[in-house]
Image (cartoon, rainbow, N blue to C red; front, side):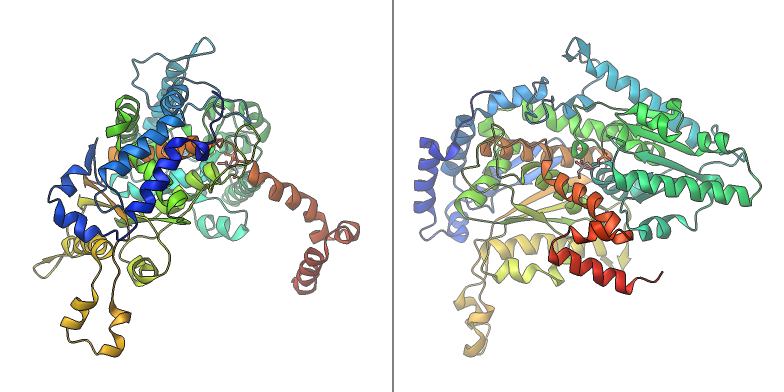
Length: 555
Ligand code: F6P
């Protein structure tokens, strides 16, 4: 990596600060729109299948140009090249960050340490597709000769959130009569609720873990294996080795550990340590998707990622909407002081997208130390959150519209729903979309005191009904809900996250912050079970809580 720039000490940062001070004096989106009838067009971009309108953000041409200057001051162009060509930009783990290699064109060659990684990627994909074709066509059956009807992905974090989000998003593409369940939490209720009613003879378990050391996943995997073998035994099947072989597969970078767990390495699908967990849904981690939506749709999904990667890599920063969206996040976090960012899908199928983004963005950029070990010099890592519209409208939109905080929001929708439903003559999706359009309009333009009075509102409640407007939003639309659209959406946010990390100087690809809790859980566990010495060594609050547990447990 090049020498780290303290971005806040650059002249580009100071210029943005001056620009901010001027722009925010009497800033009015109403005025900006009325002065420039082309504003929407000028700030809209086509990125593959995605149509992105940035015009309702608190920006002028000059803002974008100053933000791009800032990105250049942080050496973003070099950093992009380093990412795409395998430099060890994950400094604290000394690793390349090459999730873009997972979706490169099969004809590409990308050599890392003398090895063409694109060929390696295609080899695993081929193995996944071959396996999925056999399962989907009924050529590969369960141990009692029945076809597989249910896939259970056992994983957590990046080995869960991506697959479950995409499975939910692409349900209309589930086409072989195979459904998927996702067990992630070590709370045994998760396993119980999802699995106790399954038919073991038609179920396939995917143990999905990059490291194959994660306590949650390995515990759930053992629960699954025991439950499965017990059920089969009840049905008179006692060839345990063959049963596990037919019903358990693994996805991991640690194939030796997979074998130790008792899964045949032939039934293991590998990936590489240059794929971060939260960047892995397009690797073998997507096996549950290949099984349910099929190889062709998965290829389309990869194509969506590729479109964004190629665009991001090849487009000048000045016109590069991926870079601009990332820099807008910097604008809001570091200059407007925004603490959060709402992601609001107006598409029920994307209902897990905000949860997915939380790991992607917050595990990546929730850092107070830069990659060279020095403290960050400004705020990093805003909180991403959201719910699908219109549910969110009836819950938290009040705060976005009239609260004291600035919440930049991304609204995402598709033009054509997979299924058209009518309420009498009313196309219900149109009713739904009307809300998508209305919300960003209300946020941007608000409602003035005169408009409220003109409605005959009693004077005592006029101020309560005023909307200030000037609340920034981005609108993202696509014609159809397709695998490519979902792939593009993920790649867009992956690269936004990357750019923000470069500006802040953090390592967006490590996650040391999740380690301490894991270690302490291991130390505390004996105290919960029975060990009084382990209990005595706890702090008074932890001791107090464990004692409450001990006093109330039902065993
Ligand atoms: O939460 C920490 C983490 O390491 C994530 O980064 C990762 O996605 C998750 O745990 C699961 O890890 P694994 O795939 O190795 O089980």
